[in-house]
Figure 1 (cartoon, helix red, strand yellow):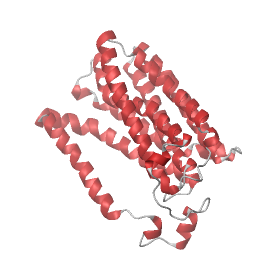
Figure 2: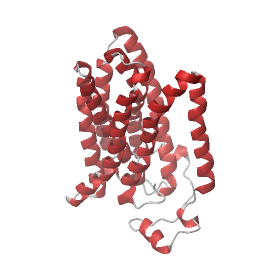
Figure 3: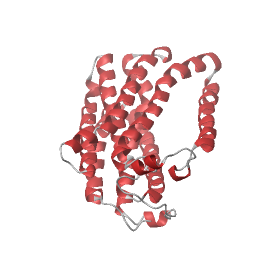
Figure 4: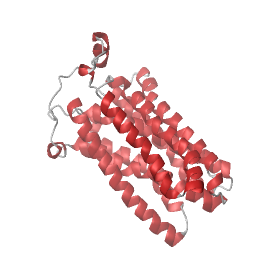
Length: 296
């Protein structure tokens, strides 16, 4: 995304590609229970793994950097580089990137918010089963609704900085405003444990999941706000690693909490506040998402 789109279009492009994972999450509740019931849980890993393997091969043979693409035009290159044209630079060593506050701002933002998404992915079926007594064959519709909302939130969140820019905000402030808006939409999720209606819970999860994906579209764009294009991939990788570590920790914590309390209340309280805390830390560490000129 950082290579192929101007900065003003990055979050929308990320929102569109990120919605692809939500399409997968929509298909999974349809495919996985059917395969599991008929062929066993081992087969579900093989079936879902095939799609990943196919995508790796497709990417390897079709992806090109803009300057190396065989059919790109001069006008398209000018559009991509309309805001901050950069000459391609060498990759920046990770050890150097770890010395920048901007790297830590992005990594901590991912560390705090990625686990919430994986918590939804892993525990939603269990929650609906425990709270509303839905079995494997009846979980499909609620999950499909939630992940459809996620796809809408992903694209909508990526588009969201545009109206803020039209209000006179700078691109960076528009990005931060969009992230704040999404973070606020997640806050009501702490009330879900008190809801008695299955459909009210589905609506609350849909709002929170859509807001997360809107947040995700914008936080993914912040490395390209703060770093030269040659460093964006590495910084994104560091943030992804931090998000995975956070997800491991929350998954472990969630298991202990549910075993001891048999309640999701504290977990949804964490989910409701994680985004605002993450945004505060990011702004404190990297005020205005200031660009790191020396990284390249």
